[in-house]
Length: 381
Image (tube, rainbow, N blue to C red; front, side, top):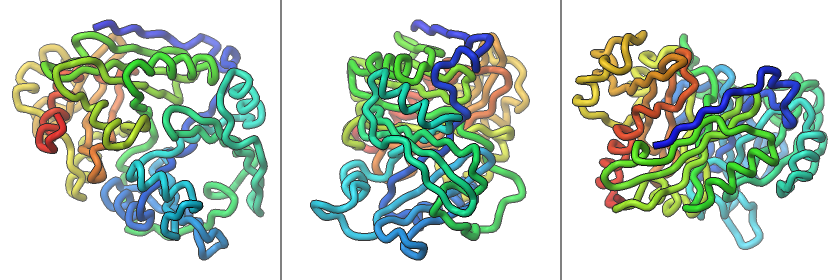
């Protein structure tokens, strides 16, 4: 396996041709946004903060905005049945199932960001435009990325509202938890077809000015049966990180192949959520019914020998099936959910970092074998 790491420029903000302020929102198209909002409130501990729908003048869709710390999910579904000339989200859900349609990025200047992106070859979806209400003005624009995924560019520096103009405050669906389950979006992973990973890495390099943070290719990102390749691109300050995966030729169908088949093309595979207490996170999510991938006990027999001392004792990691990895900068703890819908597509990662800016390279084999066991149960390996 080859792993290459690139450090951010020392004067990242000044050197960055496409400055960003972070992830603004992960936007999902779902079949039933009301039920999905309840799921993410109950199972993930998020809080419903805003809503937009027929009750306040938006007749075609209903959207629920949930937050946990700096992490924001927007869940949208179509009110009317899908028709030949109906809302594109109805078609999207029919073809792909529930999934991510937009990785929205907050930028200091949406007009400049859009102009730079289009100049460098991006396909524009929405030209910069202002939306306003009594809380101020937001400038929005959008560009296309892999599959039917988009990046909305959000400039909200002069806006004081809850999310965007048109949204109204909403009462939480369940009581707020005393302690957050997670605090932020760590990274978002995209799956693309065989032979297209480098194409999209180059897109982020050229269009958004992102740099290559890490790459994973070779035997250590493979099991006996399946393989994949991955490269990670990130903005200059490492606030926005996008790993891009493609399948590799192997004996059987990889997790990437399975995703592409059931999603119907490229899209967002998983979202990693940053927590500062993964023990609390896993226990509270498990108690609420979230299912995590299983890890054999044998993984933990030698874990302490190569990971060393971590905040969480190995016995507790074993009990909760949490993975650990260490690199030259520190260590991380991570765990992965099973897919959160019936189609084996979108899932989540919970990650607690202690210095390490890696992605769990030492866990790839154990993780992929765990995914393969689930694929075999579904008859998709």
